[in-house]
Length: 457
Image (cartoon, rainbow, N blue to C red; front, side, top):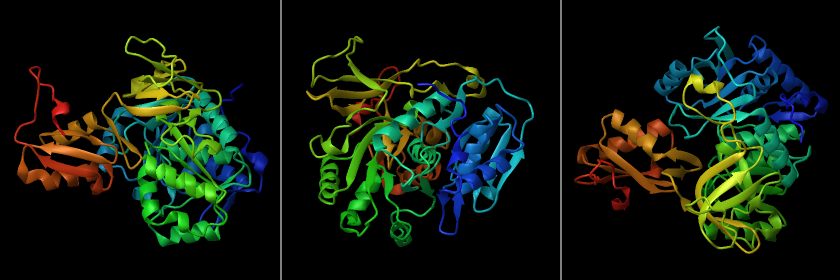
């Protein structure tokens, strides 16, 4: 496959077709391109741009404009803590910042921050955060090839067409949310942008009135959808929904797969990571009921291997090892400072996922656990080590552990059990329901001073 650097260069071909819709207006592809050019007119090629994102047309236009000009946008959620944002700005020294006024409602403004061009690898397209909203300086370096390869693949297996209309259900700065936007625009489909969520009654009225036929969600939101009796809702235009962003428990996966099957609609479970641009696998809808608990098969153009502790490839089914992925969507590597933007492709199309997995006799893969200390909290990946460091820097002696959607913070100070949750909520912008503070007399450590997480239950 041949990859063009500017994979949004052909958006004009969709002309007056609706590209982005809101409750107040419809923006055609031609208008979206004009908006993109106006927002980024003054940006020079290969500039580094901090793009502060909300789910609204201006953010999408800013992103498209950066890509078309071969500037490198750093996608940052508008809810980021201002101190953390300033820390990132000092570390990366962006040439421009493109954001809504005061990070809130208002017109998007472009400000020049630094005229000096940076040394940036020729194929670097965007930077996406690896750790949700904690403001970590660590970003994934995604290339033009990565994005185009993954976009083509997702469009192929989801069969996205011009007749599709998706609605935003997660931040644009999150790899899953961004991939939904990119794939639909690439296909000439429509994106309905909103900051409303599943708990807002207006959201469901929009679904009906605007004839939305698809959306994506993470495991936590599927739990909420279940409580909202989603499968009983009257949504005649809904064609399919997707799930990624972590492991959905088998009972819910079975319930949604069965419910959608009865309605002659599709429920598609997927698996991915920012390090793989977005998606690595999916369960074809015809197997949704037969492969409960699976992450499915590799996407078109990708493949999996399972390796043991000695790096040997496991060829027999039902034997566990680390999941390794190969594909053109495997990203270039990480950046933790401005100088890292000059690095070339460090991964060479191979990604050690850090997940322990196995495959069955039919070649479907199943995740059994994680090698590293990451949790998925409401679809956001949280690095426990980074969160610990942030909390310790703010005066909390603690240790973090837990399971997906439930993070435990072990504290040696009883008086700070409430405030540590408030701080964690503020830093991550995740609901406090995700956190539990637990008093412990002494944090267990080995002789080298390393915390014994296995003793924290």
